[in-house]
Amino acid sequence: MRVVPPFLLGAALSVAAIVAAGLLLYGGPGFIQALGVLLAILLGALAAGVAAGQAGRTTEPVEALRRRWLLTLLSFTLAAAFSAGWEAFRGFGALPLTQAVGLALLGGLPLFAGGSVLGFLGRPADLPGGIRGPAVPALAGSAAGALLLGFVLFPALSPTGTLLTCLVTLSLAALVQGRVLDEVTWVRGSEEVAEESDDVAVEWWSRGQPQLLQLALLEGEHLRMVAREGGAPVRPQDLALREGIHRWVRPGGQRVLALGVGMAPLLRSVAEESAAHNDAERHDLILVDENAALLKAVGDHLLNSDALQRRVELRRRSVREVLAGSPAHLPPESWDLILIDTLSLALRPGRFELPAGAVLNLRAALRRGGALVVGPMQDGGRPGSLLDTATAMAAHFPRVSLYVSGRSIVSEPEGVPLSRVESWHRSEVDPGSRPAFLVAARGKLTEWPDRVGGYLRVLIGEPGEAQEGGRGVEG
Image (tube, rainbow, N blue to C red; front, side):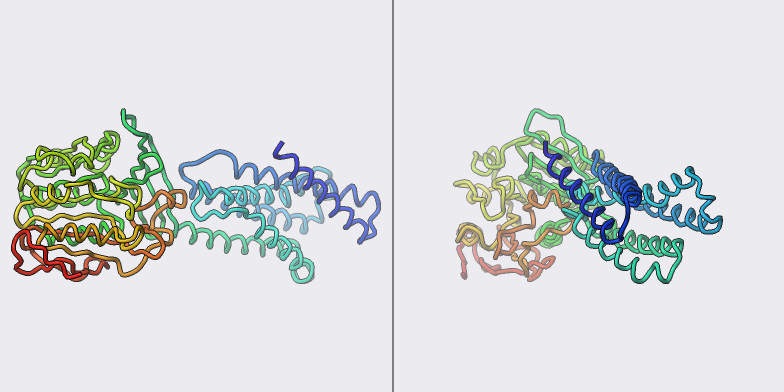
C-alpha cells in the first residue's frame, strides 16, 4: 500500500506534463500518442534503474557504485556512437527496427543506468557519502539541463555533440563522486562471534584516501574497540596514551593489567615492545573483560600471532568486580602499569564511576614507580565527576595528572562510518566538554610531559619528591 500514493502522484504529473506540451505546441492526437509512448518508455527505464540501485545489499558499496557510474558512462558512449551513425546514414531509412534500437540506446539505457546511480546514492546506510533524497538535486539538475539544451546546446551543436557534452559532464560527476568516496569510511565487512555471552560482531572499516583499514568490535550497539589493521591504536586518545606509556613506564619486562577490551590495542603495543626487550614467554600482560565473545574476537583478530598469544593472557572477569574485589584480583605490588577502560564501566566517558574501594585497591596493586591510566574521560558532563575522580586519586597517590584535549570533539569522529557514529564514544564527548584521561603514579615516574599527542597536562598532584601517600593537591 505504501507504493500507491507516489505511484498515483507520478501518473498525474506525467499526464499533466504531456497535456501541457501538447497544448503549448499545438500538437494533435498523433503527437500526444507519440510523446506518451516515448515518455512512458523513458520514465519506465528510469524507474527500473532506481529500483535496481536500491535493491539488495553489498559488502563493497564503493565498488558497486563505481560499477554503476561506469555503466552510465558506457551507455552515453553508445548513445553518442548511435547518434553519429544516425546522422551519417540519415536515420537508417527510418526503419521501425532502427527506431526501436535508437530509443533503447539513446534514451532507455542511459536513463536506466543513471537511475541505478541515483537509487544507490539514496542508500546512506550502505553507502559512504550517500545522501538522503538525491531526487531533489537530480530533478534540479534536470531542469537546468533542459534549459541548457533548449537555449545553448541544440542551437550550437548536433545531437552527437550534445551527447558527447553529456559524457564529459558525467565524467566530471564521477570524478567528484570518487573524491567523496575516498574521504569517507564505510563498513567493509562484518561477522558475528558465536559465543555464550552477549551479541558481539567484528567489523572491518575501510577508507580510500588516505588508505585505512580498521578492526572494530561491537557489543550489541556499543562500540567497544577499534584498531588499525595490524593492531596499532587509531583513535587520538589511544595514540596519546601509547606515546605517554613509553614515558611513564620503564621499557621491557613490565607487568601490565588492562581492564576492558578498549585497552587491547595499547596492550598489544606494550606486548610488542616488551618482546623486543625481553624474550621471556610468560604471561606478564593480562587483559580482563567479562564478555567471553569479545575476548575471543581480540584473540582471533588482534592477538593473532603465536608470540602475542604466549605473552598476553585473556581473563574473563567483570572489571567492576576486579576493581572492588579482594586482593586475589589485585595482588599487592603486582603491576607496573594498570590501564582502565572507562567504557567497560559506563556507556559514555562522562558517566563512569569507580566502585567503592577501587582507588585503595589500585594503589596497593601498583609497584613502586608504577602508573595507573584511566580513560577515556571528559572535563564536563556530570558536574564535578572528573575533578572528584582526580581528587580521590590524589588523596592516595603522590603524583596525579590530568591530560585534557586542546579542543572539544563533538563532530563526527574521523574514520568512523556514518552508520556507527552514534555508537562511537571513545573520542566523542558531551557538548561543551573535552576528551581527557588521568594518570596516577606510585613513586617517581620516568617523565611528566606537558603535552602528549595533543593532550595538555593539567597539574593535580605535585610530581616532585612528595612522600608516598601524601595528598599534594593544588587545585
